[in-house]
Amino acid sequence: MRILLTNDDGYHAPGLKVLEAIAATLSDDVWIVAPADEQSGAGHSLTLTRPLRVRKHDDKRYAVAGTPTDAVMMALAKIMRDCPPDLILSGVNRGANLAEDVTYSGTVSAAMEGALAGVRSIALSQVYAREGMGDVVPFDAAIGWGEKVLRPLLDAPLAPRTLVNINFPALAADQVLGVRVVSQGLRDYGRLRIVSNRDPRGYEYHWFGLAPSIETPAHATDVEAVADGYIAVTPLHLDLTHHESLDMLTKTYS
Image (tube, rainbow, N blue to C red; front, side, top):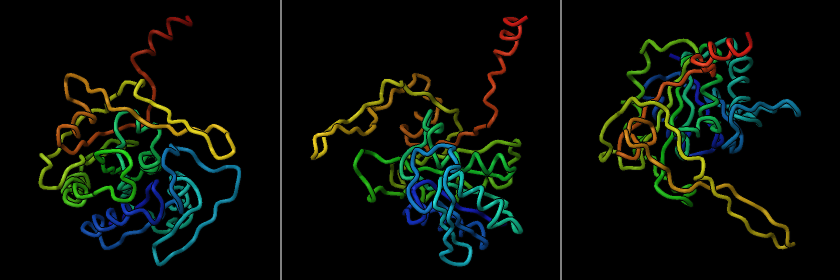
């Protein structure tokens, strides 16, 4: 089995090293094609206004000066064109990709690109407990559970054009309670906060931040699963059509 690894935290990110160690338990044919620099929040964007540059670091190891989508497209259409991957793993992201995060996430979008190309694709993210942890985010849950969560997915009969989104809770590996297969949640959009300040020249600048999550009573989504100490496994599909509205809109125009 040939595995392609990518991410949105960049080629030198600690989470990519964690993912490489996990992938090594599954195969001895592991490739890396990842963004050269951090691309968090890039979503499913691709680069159209400047040329892409690729740097070969070693055999089967490449960095792309672009987005996660760029990296996967470059891998499939050029770098690995004659030896395509059987599996794409994206991550392990430093931070959660839960609920509506998946619409912004470069990690999930890299897996989406793989799914569009017909390759089995899985996104992995490590939740952390508080803001400001930077490079000291612990990946203990991902390290301890990564192989156990991935192995059942290697031969699972996943539907075409789908991907799997995995989130590890912010716990030590021996404190994780297990795995839950759950739906994608939706948090209160009012949790967005903007941190503002002024630079030395007096101009205002802003950072996006997030307030604490709002939980749903049923505890049946990815948001609650990780909060309850479980690994959240969520199947996602790329058809954004709201099928229940088709008949209503058809009648509206008839």
